[in-house]
Image 1: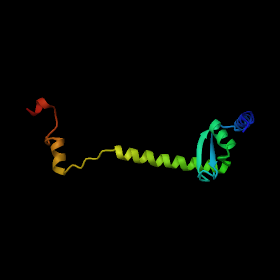
Image 2: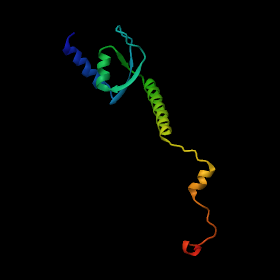
Image 3: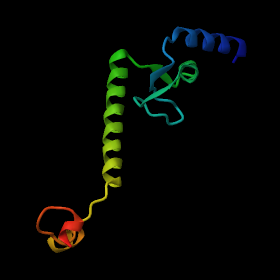
Length: 114
């Protein structure tokens, strides 16, 4: 393979990618690569995957679906993490009364009660 041609293709494809991070869809490869796997990657790596014939740029619909699914998964993870940090203590009624202290009758200051 002519490296000069390879890097010219790489630069041309990278220049054609507008966004900083793009979604690419993997292609089936002879060494066992699975087709259809989507991943978000910097445009330099996306260009390299495209030139190597291991991926293609995702369509706008595929990109939107991937980002929506990723956002939902992150939201679910954040909720689960928050729930696991939450601490709950079950207190019986008698323990609750003990924590609140004895009930004092009457109004006024401490000096008036003596």
